[in-house]
Length: 323
Image 1 (tube, rainbow, N blue to C red):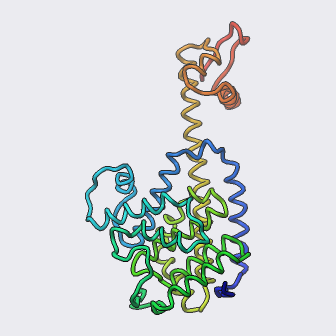
Image 2 (cartoon, rainbow, N blue to C red; image 1 turned 60 degrees about the vertical axis):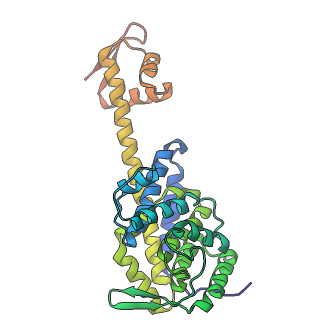
Image 3 (cartoon, rainbow, N blue to C red; image 1 turned 180 degrees about the vertical axis):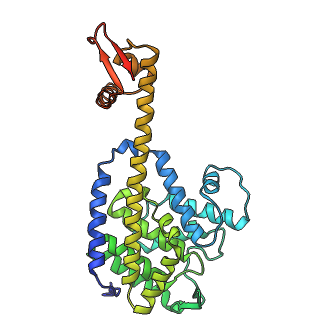
């Protein structure tokens, strides 16, 4: 067990970001479990995979990635199709990895790159450089040091008491700095940050952070270069926490919009039944719409408060009037 600690500084920006993210996580906890459907999980899995692959130059859209996930044939180069299939395999095991085990990370690389590399799941044996807009922006450590550096990084990962939000971002940068594989480092770095975050809060299993990183791809690379120039991961940590923050805000907004659409559909279902039969009972509305009794009563109250619906007469013998 080494005493290695990656260099980074906890800035006021990082503290503020961690605080705001924690508040948003509390808000998301109030979202009913039934709203996190398999359909939503699949949609956000596709967004994660698409975003991460597009950063690496894969041209597949979310629609094409969905088609591959569904086992359908799509038009594209063999390399792009295999990249998508590999990413699907790696991401489908997202919640099964132990973020503290180097062996699990190696397995994720094997799943991700097996049909693309001869040495998938193994550290590189040659020197590599990371290219930026002005040429080589980073020369990775020599191959004979990779196993040692990755061992130290995972020792720190297992032992640190730092906040998991910070830890995930620091790890992501340090992993890219070491660049342990001959290819697939960006994809695995982003994947493993998600693995760490899911161990912290399982809601991150359906938050597609990678899609936000793709939307801010130039800033992502700039943060990596800034961290390299400063000799510590702080600029990159701030960028990634900002991306996590943006991802959570987007998820909350999309959920609110989805609820609003669902509510409008339910409102319309009930009003349609009342227009057909002004004397329809709540039980009959439940039977015809598939909504629960409590849900129907809640919507009727809302429609009454809005002035859209009026009850004329008693419950027995009366009728509904829709304005």
